[in-house]
Image 1 (cartoon, rainbow, N blue to C red):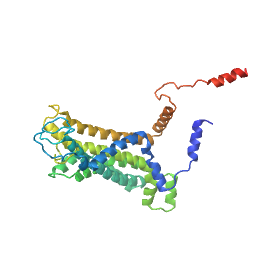
Image 2: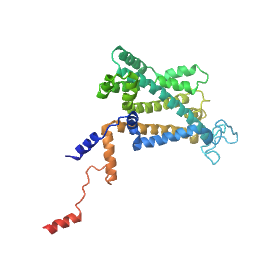
Image 3: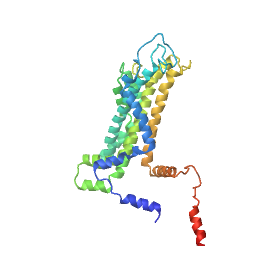
Image 4: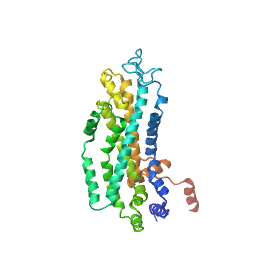
Length: 338
């Protein structure tokens, strides 16, 4: 019996998680690989900065110092100052709060709608399923950016909650389609059929039986929506659709562009918010890569094989597998026997 077959039989002989909490814990195993942990650490750093922005910021973001205009980084102002003497570091720290709030709130709204519409339309049959599928297709073709511009122009200073709501309402359709397809494949499984035969209500079948098996797709949809919402917010702020009194990294770039910081090479004004956008994008991408590695069996087996080779001291990139030479004791014993 080969080693692969032995491992496969051992996995099949392991008792499957039976309780809801056990299945939920197994579903979140996607965040236990190195990529997801690194991405979560970077994202957690920005979340902490957003929460404790008032404590971490050395100055008020609107404090004007006429004697410190266009100053490069110094011990008093670690990231320099703006054209009117505002501290750039304080603006970046306070701008993190707006980015995190809009990103997570929009993703939460979009994910809830995607779960409700996608799972229900995938589980049900007939005209109800087709109606929800048609609704999803309609929202797929609705242009989100022009709609946000129209909504923002109706308010003098649109709140971040409204911007997040519009981003969430226009960004749930892709996740709903993926969840619908996966739910349609789950509804004919044995455990779903057994729950239906026992007379369990629809809400319990979806919440207890289906959602733990869909957690990887839900997490991937949530992460993707956070990325899209953050990029949408910073883009709208940079082009001036969102008023400049709403602090986020996009408005900082808008102010820097308007005052000629790009032309005058005042890098301390536009580079820090740009790096923050790139860093949070890398964090979300790492989390998404970790989820893909967990969901895709080929990627997961390749990652496990690479980690096993590293533990044995082998180079993963070697095209030829290293073969260990026979030990001296073995050759000596053979000579003695001869």
